[in-house]
Image (cartoon, rainbow, N blue to C red; front, side, top):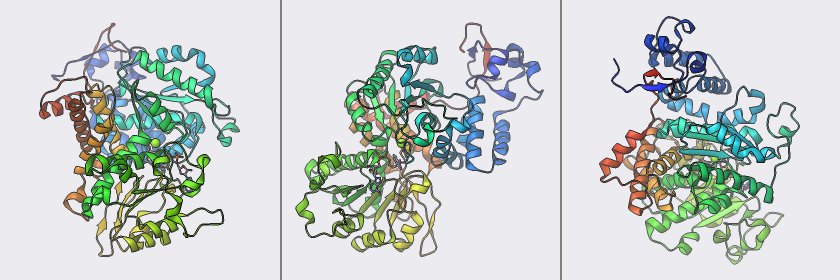
Length: 572
Ligand SMILES: NC(=O)C1=CN([C@@H]2O[C@H](COP(=O)(O)OP(=O)(O)OC[C@H]3O[C@@H](n4cnc5c(N)ncnc54)[C@H](O)[C@@H]3O)[C@@H](O)[C@H]2O)C=CC1
Ligand SMILES: CC(=O)C(=O)O
Ligand SMILES: [Mg+2]
């Protein structure tokens, strides 16, 4: 007999079997079958969750392509939530790339053709007048703690995906549950459908989103503001996570709302934090400090700027250098080559000004026909110790660039972070070969280990924000923090860096593997809560460090079946 307290549930019969939240399928016990009118609706045998996972895993294996596995898992999620999370938790390293990058990018790009049933909340620009009603209808009876939203303008590295963006919101929310233990019933995934500029989608007769050019300017701002005000009104203590907004909106919206609500932009802050941890781990191997690095960032968009600012803030906080000295350690490039003063205001986006290089520093340096200074020249001149790619330009880190970098530094730190896999600036294997195994590497999507010249394998760390954002967000949620402060983010990054295998063995990976990401995110959440309490922004008053750990553990949702009793006034 189970000693767990039974949950009171009011759904019966077909309604409970078709509710992904409550359905247990063949695992309903004999008593539950009787109480919920299921005896004749299920085959005789009562399965355990272990048996169900074994069967589901076999079924999954019969699908060959990653995309088919992705849609199988999506169906499973629609049928039985506990089974979905339990199955993935048991095969985390194998199945995360199926439900997240890289496969989810393919699922999103084909969203309208794969569409079977709704997931999350679709708020459409043309239905602005019913936004609140739609919102209330969808969230009735829920106690939402986390909202993940996207406007889908820059999904991973594949650009504008219109309504298909719901796929990244739900994938990011699922990762919160898998890696941090956020209760899936308390999360809301939202796509803000403001149209799309993706011509392929607009001309597709099967496109299920709003077939309209993307709304920009005042209309867009009003729509987003309506949405944010709804969240503030109905769920004032929730965390609002922005994902894959375009470069002209991501940082702007974060700044606009950060004083008013607990907001988090994953591409800016999550990517910044995981990259800070990676570089901290790498400088541990090279026995130098953050502030000693010369850092080239290729692709100065949302992620590029988020990474740059976070590394800069890390230098200031941890190495005690001034902001202006720290700014000088960075060299940013975008479509127009090196970002230098003479590029002019139209080519230098807001937020980049602090990192613009003076022209006189580059006198005499070779330019291309358009007068731009390209990556190879920058590498020649700067002799960077760190090279980061977030440009979506596959192959940008050529053999020549990487070899040039290796001439100027003993252990080049190279992070091709663009997703999905096919968009990486170089493969780790190439970077490893071109540097005779000297490069310290991490990538945005998973890659197999590289063979070192001495025959050993080098495990390539996955520098993906998923290694840290679930812990950052969960820490903010459980501490009831009014905001996710810079200090909380740095605390999370430091905790992640402290868990790097390379700390113990310099030939090992720069970050822990995804198999251990639940433990890693737990530690990140602990660091975030401790910092929130120290900074006085937490809404809880937990005493010692052990209490923080116990409370976080208590609040984690786990994919296990709770016993149910039928109750006409129970949950639904
Ligand atoms: N590993 C991770 O955790 C993360 C990886 N990313 C990846 O980073 C990439 C960029 O994402 P966002 O910053 O959100 O996009 P974004 O569109 O804001 O930034 C991309 C930047 O690269 C620039 N760019 C494009 N072509 C270029 C070229 N030929 N040369 C130089 N610069 C060029 C663009 O002008 C833009 O400024 C994507 O592939 C995304 O998947 C983003 C967030 C997290
Ligand atoms: C990982 C992620 O957030 C991105 O590639 O956009
Ligand atoms: Mg993203």
